[in-house]
Image 1 (cartoon, rainbow, N blue to C red):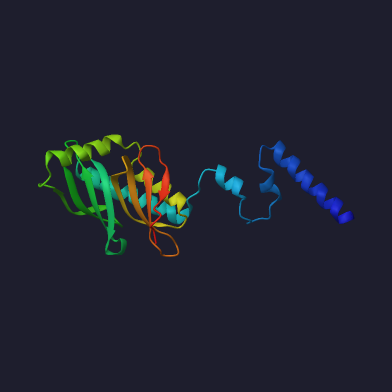
Image 2: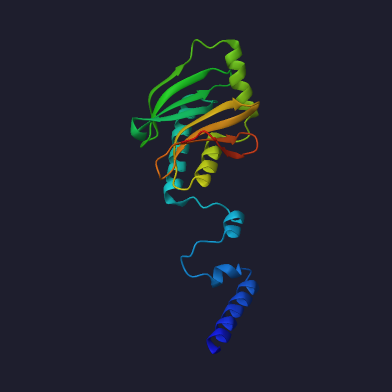
Length: 199
């Protein structure tokens, strides 16, 4: 009985202290290292972790290197090759011409290309430009959303495309269990969706 009263008093004190300090009472009363409650997880800003931060930074560096190689361009596709050591990247310039290149992952250095796609017609160029103009979320923002949605995941491909009359980033991501997932990020509002046919 005495232990119950003391325990209740301590919990009440923690609640009052947390509330007075502007904190969350659950964080004060949960044991150290305990996972946050679903409510906290749903309302806090996503935390990526060191691995996700590193991958996000690497994707940004590779993308920036590719766009620098074709001034005024926008990245529309990245696909990893050679076990992640190389990225095949496509960018679209301001005339709608697609340029392809290979970028080394470690140094974020263009090692092949850029090569302009010569066989594109006016319709292809217009389609590329329409997608680029419609996208409010770029490849780096889309990657960040996927890495937040799949903790510990590794992105292997990201591609700007149209799907069911929407402009989306189609993303292949490999979660820690190794089964590839196909996901999309709406390029206008950032909504993340998992393909129901994913492995």
